[in-house]
Length: 553
Image (cartoon, rainbow, N blue to C red; front, side, top):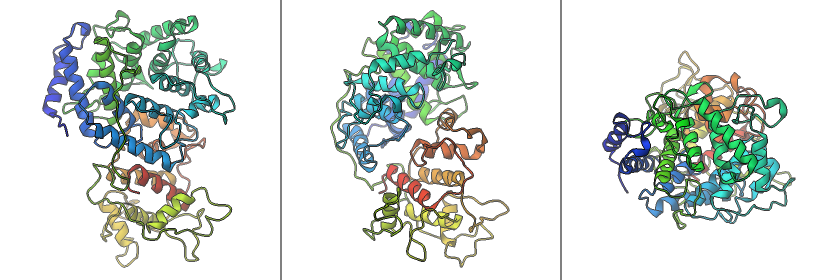
């Protein structure tokens, strides 16, 4: 495996800032400096994401950035991702998400970057959902934006979708994006779809994304006019440091989307419209780099995984533009990766050493109240956990999927799910050593999965809410080797779709956002309802998806 020299990475990235090689005269900077920066950042991502899985962090963006960078990545790396994707697609029956069709787009783009055909992944055509116009645009303008980028990345034919109410065409998606343009020339996530929203304020991230999608259609007069207005808007939003703010806060990802837009449009990074006080957008992006590797999200001291993966993509886009190669999303020059990969059940490469997969010990285990002619929607999840003795039925032999679960019961099944050895502790005064759940609570506490309710108590008989379960499952996911730190911008983007997002407590938002982004929680509802008590079937589904994502089934 190719090792990264972190001190060298820190030196190169610091050099780029301190010597001014990425300043307003960036176009005159030696290509070797930019190439070295790309090399070191790619090496950081390669070492950080050792086993890429399906997901918005530690998954497609990492694969995409590395594949487009030209970094020396062993073919086995892409094989591992592809095998994980096949397993994931089989497990969900080809349905990556019920409503968020950007999940399909992101995967299609990553597959294009490694030379794989998204029309046949474990027997499923992952481009087909993008032929459904109504479902693709449901999310807002980012739906058609990423559908276009995905389909154009490999020049896929527009997929025919017989189940669609409205069969999509590329032009319909172009027109939808144009119809959503706001009066200030930019775009926002939900704005512009109707006349009363035309006056809303645009967001630089979404504006950059829309420009990336429209870049291939600039010969259309209406598109050309929209691009010109959007560039004027984006220039006006740029601050004196060369960067941008989204939702009132400067951040690196906004720089990334603006850089990607300019590169897709063939506009130089030091175009006078995008140099403020001598600073380019790239200058601003590089101000977020962290010694030791990676990028910050919003200027704190820590490297953020999503910001780092997307930062690599921006550096690669600039490098490709300077060298006259295909732009980032025009993948006629994609690398080619074959099939293969690691087996399910092995777990992620960076999981905690004590975490292990539970073997099947009771194959075919089921319960009468979840099977039969009216099978429960979560039957597969419940049976998979029951077959491994992670979860069981009640005293009457039934599962009772709609009943609640106590905090002690939840601690027990999480410990079992991770294959941890139960060992009692003395952390909580209301958890007597002789109780059946004492060892499970003690173990869950030892590994940081659970905390008390205050005053040294755990409240073992209390019910568990959706937001509490999400936080605990997220902690368990981290032990499994998953990257659970989404960053504040990603948390906001995930939760902003819910009407009661602002009512959720700050301590719960990271966990809720992670669980929604990984499909651990169902986001088809209009509200989070974080204080609602979770049912036994819901907890079974959460743990089943977690174990699938962590390759522990």
